[in-house]
Length: 358
Image 1 (cartoon, rainbow, N blue to C red):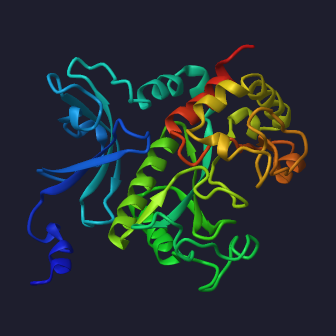
Image 2 (image 1 turned 135 degrees about the vertical axis):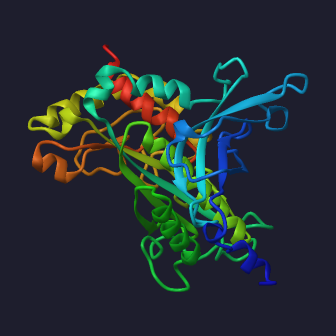
Image 3 (image 1 turned 180 degrees about the vertical axis):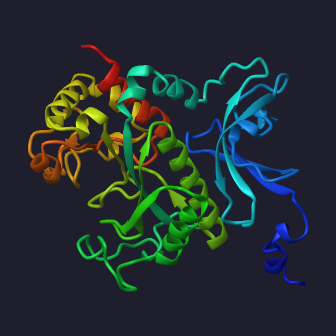
């Protein structure tokens, strides 16, 4: 039992009822600034309401001043910990002042208010989020598998490709897939993307704010796995300039009314609402998205809204052929960037399509 890896794999449940809870929150940096720290709890807990609040030094995360630095963590969602195993848990939290006010970077609080509205609850909004990301060499910040300072062959063979000259980082991707399933995340699939070194995983369908909780947990797990592998993960919407695809977080959306007979008419009305608030949504859909939404590489131009044409991957919003054929189902908002905040995006779509009265 002298190896570090052996010690890290000790199963605590064989010797104690105590567990380790890893509290996870979003820092005040880039918007993708995940932080975490661990504490010991006396026994197994699966209900976030039964977990203790905790605190951290907000002055070290750009979320408080040094003379009033305490920020309080409120547990909101619990997942099994795939790194420590046993009864240990990952805890998604949001952040508040000691007086109980959400701090400015806490986007979950306002999202929860929208999702708790009776009209939204009645519609049981489903989300399926397609999270694209790029694996980078740690020291060069260049995609893995690419020649240092150079470029691979042009795009074409990499999307869902196999082979050592097409699929770079599959071991990391599969490890992440299994870790998410173990954690209890509703991850529904993975695939290699159009640009080599870029991959995608999908979370959903999941109801309401739980979709955002799960996506943040999946992002955390991915960051931890790449940490172990000695590489970095980028959620930049256009990690490599030029004739290479960007990275998005296409968000599929459906309400109860859309899933019932005649739902296609509800879908069309919802999309029309989205079009009327296009710029407002673009402003909320991630930083640097103007580098991705150019009208090329399977995107619509950032300055215009489009949705006509079934199965059109160059549209702002896409309606699939299955939905058109069935006359009900869902639509895909293709505008969110890979670095979007799912609390903002999911609640924004619900607010516009369900609550907003133009």
